Image 1 (tube, rainbow, N blue to C red):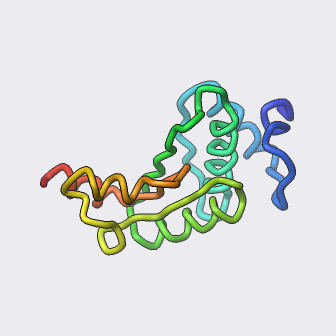
Image 2: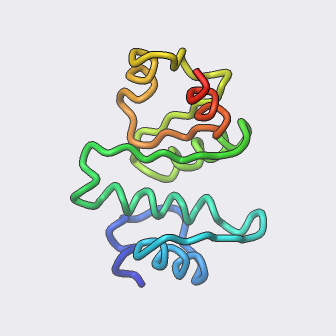
Image 3: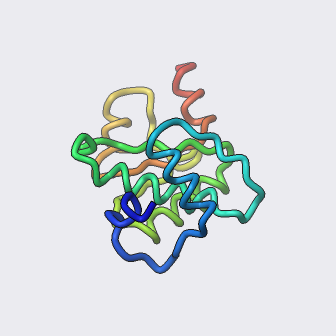
Length: 128
C-alpha cells in the first residue's frame, strides 16, 4: 500500500491502516466511505486529491470537492490547503462571484487546483 502513498511526500499526518485501505480502493475505483464523524474522511479525500494531482493526466486539471453546507466548505477547504501544496479556494452562495456568465466562472477558477463548493451554489447556477 505504501507504493501509492509514497508519491505524496511527507506530511505531518500519518494515515491509519483503514484509511490506507480506503485510499487504495479509491485509487483503483469508485468508493463510498461511510464512516463516523472524526474518522478521517477528509484526510482520505485529501490523500486522494494529492495523489490525483501527481498523475500525468492531471496537469492543469481542476479538482471539484462538493459539500452540503457552508461550514463544511470552510472546514474542508482549510484542511486541504493546510495538508497539501495545492492552491485551494472555497466558494458558497455568499462568497462566490456572480456566476451568471463566463467572467464570474473565470474569476472563481483562476489560479486554483482545488475548488470546494456547496451543492447549493452549483444548483443555483443551473437555475440561472
